[in-house]
Image 1 (cartoon, rainbow, N blue to C red):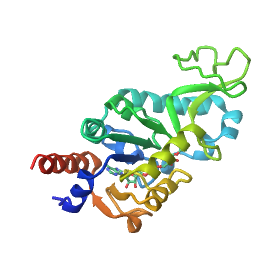
Image 2: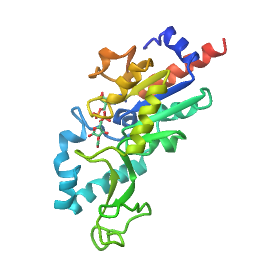
Image 3: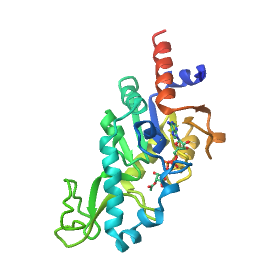
Image 4: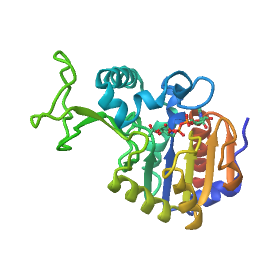
Length: 247
Ligand code: OAD
């Protein structure tokens, strides 16, 4: 069984601001596929046909088919022990912030309150022309839904080659700068600018803790690495913390 370092628990006991920077791996125990690796989505599907603006203009039906398929999976999924532990930690620390690359809404459904969604949210949609949000259930009975202005409605997620939502990225950056302990959970940390937040946090003096089932690009740059499932390691860290906090 993975041993949790005492010095990490000490760092947590002194921490006011804790940040969880999360990726697809945190939701894999909820049954949502990750992007990279053998079973990853980008191993089976081509991002250039599904996750970029030109692809949407070329074939909006196909892109919507893919997002409606993923939306169904996300709706049927439930937050797992990792999402729930992060939400519970809000009752024990002054400030708990989630900065996620995930679009699956599971942190919110688990009860996390302060969340920055760097890559958008699969529950949202907006018009490609006027950018108005259309967040009610869309009607596909007459093909790809359109806005009142005539523009096509697209999923509210960030595609390859697009800028991140400025307010969300800025919020994530400020949280990284303020973090005392910065957890990096279930991400390959290869997609920028999101992955750069790990270095922002490190440069600002945060203790960096990685939780992943395997080594990643950032493993050599962190203070603590725990290799295992997020849904097992995070509850263990929190249990240790609570035990010591009471002692
Ligand atoms: P990836 O699929 O690149 O990486 C998932 C990571 O989770 C890998 O490092 C796995 O080892 C790890 N992992 C899998 N199961 C785990 C578990 N149970 N516990 C802990 N770790 C686990 O996903 P992201 O890093 O999120 O962007 O990918 C970043 C971005 O690339 C995504 O947001 C998406 C994608 O293209 C856009 O769509 C814009």
